Image 1: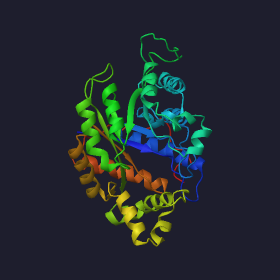
Image 2: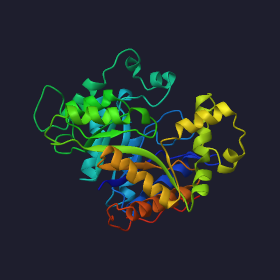
Image 3: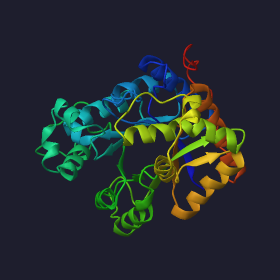
Image 4: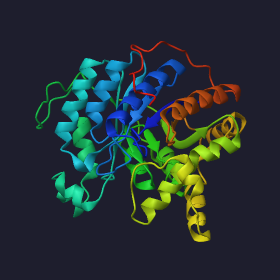
Length: 348
C-alpha cells in the first residue's frame, strides 16, 4: 500500500507574516514526523505574497535540524532558476549534514513571472529549454565516476534522493529515460495524470539508482471533522485560485473572507473546475478519496498539501488525514517524537 508524505508552501495567510509562516512550517514538519508521514517537502516559489518558501535549501536545513527521522526535501527546486552545480553543492551539503534524510525534487517550471526570472539571472530559460541537459548535469555531480565536469565538494558520496517533478508527459518521459522516480502534480494538472503515468511506466529505463518505476502523486487535501467544515476551511484556497486568475494575488484569505465572497456564475465555474481534483471532506470522504486515487494510479506514494489559512487547522488536517488513511486500509506508520518542541509561535 502507498505511503503518505507532506508538501508545504510555508503559507502566508491574511494578517500573518513570512516569519510566522516559516515558524508554522517548522511546527508542521515536527507534527508530520510524529504522525508518521514519510517525507516533508517544501516548494520553491518567488515573488508570491502567500508563499514564504523561496529558498528551499535554506529552509530544508532548518527543518532537518528541527526534526530527527522524517525525510526532508524539495518539491521542488525549479532548476531553470539555478546553475546545476550550485544545486548539487547545496544538496550534497544537506546530505552530508543529515545523511539518508535528504530528497532533491527538481522541476522545469520557473515558479514565478518573467520579470523575476530575469532577476534570478537565468534569462536564457526564456529563450530555449535546457532542462534535460541541466538534469543530466545535476545528477552527474553526484556520480562516483570522474568526468570532465568539476568535482564539487561535497559531491560524490553525498547524494540526496533525486526525484523529477512534472505536470505533463514531457517530464514523465524524461524521468523514464533517466531512470528517476517521478512525482506528478495531480493537484494542478489532473487532466494529464493518466497519460503522464502511462508514459513514465512504459518508457522507464532502469538506472544505477532505480531499477523499476516509482510514482508519487501530489494531491491537495483538506480534512476536518465533517464535510461542511472541510469545505469552509478550503474556501481560502478556492478564492485565491480566482485571485491569481484575475491578476490580484495576495496572502491566503481568511475562511470568513472566502465564505463571504460573492462569486459570479463564471467565477464559481472556474473555481469548481480548479478544485475538482482536490480531496476535501471529513475523514470518511478523505479516506475514500485517497484510496480511490491510489487504486486509479497505482502510486507508490501520495504527497498531500493542505492549503488552509490557520496553522492549527493545517496540523489538524494532517492528523485527521493520516487517521483516515489508516482506517481505509493504509499502512500504520511508526510514530516518533520530534527532535524539538514546536516553536512558540508555530501555531499562531
